[in-house]
Length: 348
Picture 1 (spheres, rainbow, N blue to C red):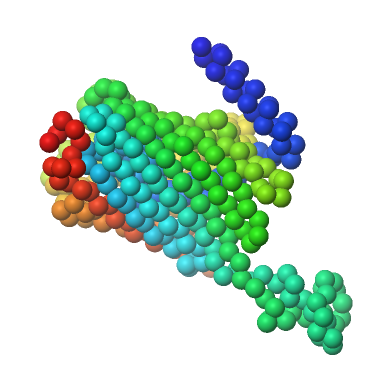
Picture 2 (picture 1 turned 30 degrees about the vertical axis):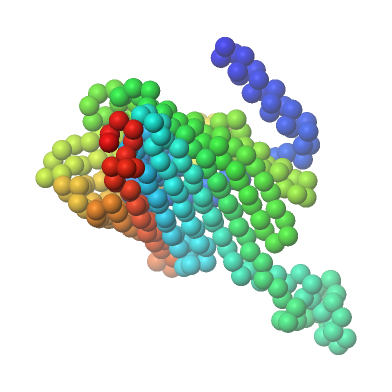
């Protein structure tokens, strides 16, 4: 059976390449989907594949949605590079029956107000639009400069199921939309994930993103393929200091021949590490720290109010003061509809 599935997958990829002759395996084509979501996971450096247990699991490991026993709503705002880039996230998930959960998530990465000088080059004597910037009489007319935006959207439709007390599994269908000026692209991808608890307090997770290879087709005829990424993680919960301490470690295994841009590599296979640590005091507040795949140190904190979690994370590039990019701040909220009428079936 497995050999038949592999053969079908290979035929699908070959068919795609034949139908779209301008296909290119985009080494960073899906990079905007690798940023992460949620103040809690990002405060831990993104090391969340094994302990994803709330609505943000739809991104980190869809299997983790099966932990949810009440509906949740999440929102996040992320300002990057001194507010040049805005990243927004919203999601809703709800339990169904005794062992399933469904969810929808939306992410937008946008750069707005980009000056577009195409068509703004004029002859300073006649005022007519020209296209040769090397002419002595060429100048930019500010009145002809337009503004465009670059927007990347991802829509996740998620499903999770409790197979047993120790094993959960889940999947995503994701729709991708990319726009820059008048050009656009659309793609569809799939993720599958699993969570396993072999012994008490030890959690293992795996999320295979873009499992069938995600095709992103541009309307000008160019097509990119996003290669699969395997996210593998482990975490352990330690009861101590009046609360709990959770060390977590993730690896992103990619097959894009990233070589020296990754933490380390074996030929075309690259490995990027996420490491995180969280201390939670009596389920009231948490402090976090981590190190992510783009060599950023992260810190964060969170407070748990009745039905509401508020989490903040901060990230700084490991560079000298003169070279350093602006810091990144993220804040997210999760509203849990923790009422009997919304509870998972069997918990009423």
